[in-house]
Image 1: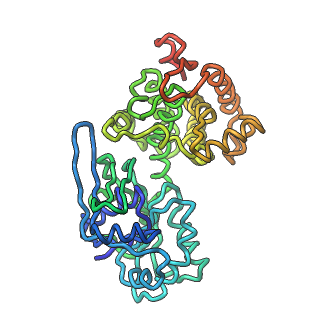
Image 2: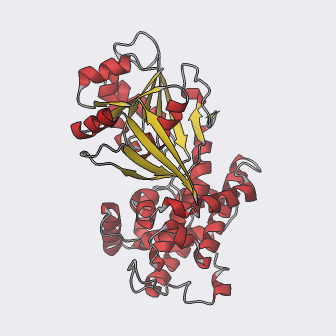
Image 3: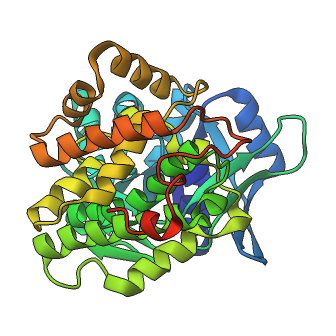
Length: 403
């Protein structure tokens, strides 16, 4: 069996390739750039380092090769004979794959499943529309969304080196694939669950783990932490993060039924994963692109909206949303745009405009109050000096009860 994977980034190499290789697939990457393709062909493998505290497992994916995305003839030959096609290019880039995939599908004699492993609710549908818009024959083929739960925080390689591309990730092996989008049966793959309601699966991830992840980043940034695991050791931050997860779970259980969110067991599991210091995951990586992460269906506003339906005040989510609005990384273009928008139009306008949904006014007014208090409480976001932000300037016992 052969799997063609569009992308060589963290998700593609750190999870999808080793998962499919373990299930018996030969891996062909579709890469951008001749140097990257040459490196993959020359080394013939990639390495994934799975780290969990003191534990390290090295996974070698052998027999890989690559096709440059602009080499349409070679790419079409690979797509014609593929048993599975996967994409890991980011939701905003899926539309760019339409024409190259359409050309490859034109020569096929049998149906094939195309799975878009992206962090969004309708990745498979987006890819299907892109291929159809390019004149591709989509009716015979499956277009499904795939949801990865593993955190892959780094990808390292150098063209001149004989060392394979190396990915660093946590050992999480769960993956959910949208069953309704498939046309051909999927072989049994370890860790993969076929789900009927993909939107529910995405929300369960976004409104618990993902919300907690960015909560650590944005709160940690205000207090000057560089790494996620170090920020989570802060008693004030960890207290708010636990409440963020609980608020998200209240909304999920209200909307999808009691127990859907995983309860206390899942809360503990999330905190344990976030505490994995061996990942050396950074506040800057997790907090980047705040404009996207403040969207109405994303991990903060989406979580808060569902929590409010469950009659939760979502106070901890207000704190984290306020921290996101205060976030500034001069190296992140999204962060620079957010800062400029707030300076020109104000935080409340930005919050309501970015979300694109009708936000609860109580949540909005509380969040804007918190923005003012956080802005007044921190003189700097210098990453070396931990500044006495609003909550850090209060007695620990009082700060632990925020939210």
